[in-house]
Length: 218
Image 1 (cartoon, rainbow, N blue to C red):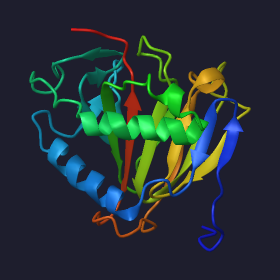
Image 2 (cartoon, rainbow, N blue to C red; image 1 turned 180 degrees about the vertical axis):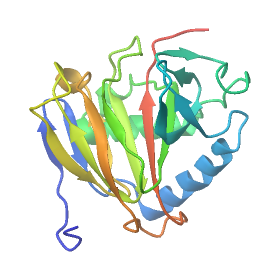
Image 3 (cartoon, rainbow, N blue to C red; image 1 turned 90 degrees about the vertical axis):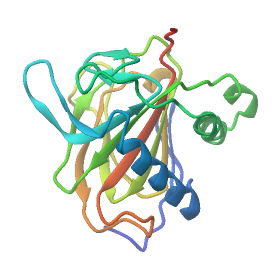
């Protein structure tokens, strides 16, 4: 795992930025506590069922808007019909801080107003196939936060699920932002390394919070 070699900030593609260790340990612990509350409902953490009958190996809970393939709604009609938990203002502020640090542009980040979060929990066997985040109407960047076990994140191209792509190890506390030319890049998680997380209060597994602007109203 090259645990003794410190990761350094990188820009693996235009508009894509990786800032290792961006979240402090207490911030990670606070997010773990918040995620536990969100996972309990009103719409609980669940495996998402795909249109062709498959079931995603990650478990997901949403804030602000409920995502199901391939649309957003205010209520979780595929789970229990209840309205999802609100997207908190403090999480939007965290997203703006992330964008400002990633792009080194405080002024530009002020216009970023995420209104939904997809929170995915990966156990040791979970994976995420190559896909594009394109159900949003807004082209604003996606802010991704990792907590817990390290994973291999695959950042691809905008044309197909195949090569060229870059594999990046995302560890607990890492920030990854993709916007601009990389906003619609295919991406996925190919592997999780159990037992590599820090002392965040999680016994095992990986949490990934992705903050997005839907561009939706109502």
